[in-house]
Length: 425
Image 1 (cartoon, rainbow, N blue to C red):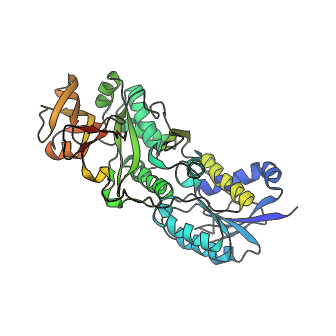
Image 2 (tube, rainbow, N blue to C red):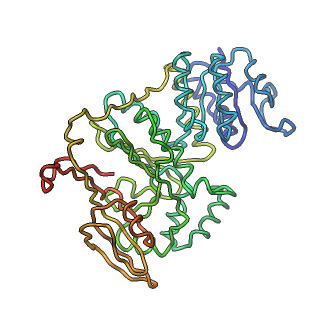
Image 3 (cartoon, rainbow, N blue to C red):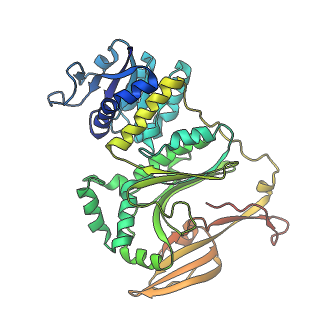
């Protein structure tokens, strides 16, 4: 039987998972591909360590030795950080290899470059594992893009943050206690900043933006806030009101700009991501024909991530093609209704303060009110955005209620006429 020769760049948790998956599922892969996939080389940082791999496998610290493997077809990359992963994959493509990566930071910055290069060289770049581990969102979006236009993406993209918020709510524990437990269970790193401050979810959102819209917003324009300021007291009040705090990554295209954020928001039982708990990830894509499509699954871990990379392998070997990529969407034509109209944001927000008063906002309606531990909790509806509320009222804590923020288009000549389009964020 013919062999498909592959190499692994990096042999940490993910790299070991790929190696293990290829060995334990060898017969399944043979049945699907008609050929056997064999790891011929592994690139490591420390060549002195003993590794539990087959005797024939080349273990090296020199990437050039990997490239010299005769008949090499596939390169799996599981290195942390932008470099040297980007350089290695560029060289592997030039060598004629298909490449499959789990490196979200590198791919968020350089994914378009790699995809363009692969297209010219008629090679494949697999990146399913960069966004949500074993949750197959990349191929799902690629399939939707055959016909549908994607209007928005809304997702829980970090299992660590979701685990922490779930357990703070269900067990009434403070943030630090749940974070410590997450570290003990291996859900959080010793330095958890990337997860709890929203960096990990941000990079994943940028990858989904590139795939869905053909480009990303200016990174500095994306609102990013972590979960470290979320308290168990806040969660308890919101729970009584029927809300859960979720750390959501969201993006949608608005004419020639993006509206995007990674931050804690409130969701109610009607929201598609309300029931996504613990370390699970989920992505909801709103499309022109299929409506709202939600995909849920394991967000991280050795085997879920390895699963995504191995599925990419079978995809390339069966179809020998690159993923479909979304072309840039043109803005509305000049003179369109959208350009002639004024926009007013009408939304629901939970606000917290020692004494709540509002400045710079119109028509504040109080929907709920509660006083707890000398703090006033209000659920309000008003014509303002989160940023505007905080700018005018910097002493308040503000949570947006997801799905309750709407844009009303008001015709400039008739300010009192509400026009057709209402868009859920």
